[in-house]
Image (tube, rainbow, N blue to C red; front, side):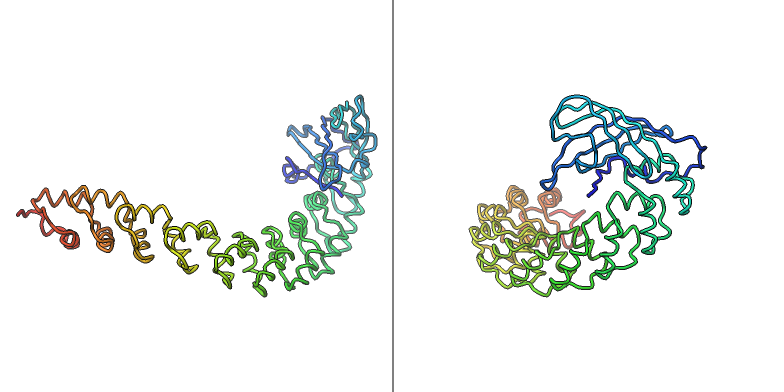
Length: 409
């Protein structure tokens, strides 16, 4: 299996075709670094090449199975000089350098194959630039690959398409597998996206067995991107959420609804919640911890919608206890929500108390905030000799604002 760590690779893929060169064989020189990595319990040699082509700095990064680079054995942890080659139809790269344990570095020389250029010209790919041929060497673009893809209906692939397909391991076998799975004639770009996101014939079959057949190419990619797997479907089914639409599954997964969250809610008495209720709870941060906190604040047995509303409007345990400390204990859920919606805060209550208005009922505090009555308004009235007004009078004065201006008691 070939992998690519595509650092700087995209700069290679947007190169305009250059005119065909003379018969002089193409060569490129540069520097290389190799290191031993492990991925999925398998050893890989990550090889980076740096060079300059047509005045541009070029950086390629590829990973190889150790046996693909005959003459380089980083698993040996040896010290000393190394020499190895990478032979491909498009060209050959000769590496010379020094190994220091499980990494090595040195210089390379790439020599392009004239025979490859001639064969590709016969397939319609004329004017392959030196830079493109170098990239085709590293990604192992072959005439056999071009022919095989043409046999499957891909006769108009660009040079960029060929390179990207090899980078992401879009093979003829992969194309056949997706066609057999019900996805024939996919655009080249879609095949590449499938490989990038891990859409495979096996994944299609597993999703079909899980009850989701006939998904579009876009749906398959969305499933992989957001982690909607057959295992997740089974998890939701076991939690009592079966036969959901695919879009509902994706939304659930995006917002982190999993079996642990469903179980936590059930233990708190929130059983048989719908997919939409669970999703809204996760979106707005209703957690088991929040439910416990609200219970300790005196709010037991709230509906899920009430809990969501509390989170939306910032009705935290701190807000509730703060109101209680200021003399507003045992308020109903609805009153507290209105206080938060209209901005009745501890600061507002203290300012009104300093202005001479203490122990105002909660519903009147809400009316004052709705109509914009504050300490500044009280002072403005006082400046016009309107003092000693009741809280209700203040609200009426604000509603009919202006009648008292120019007047005095």
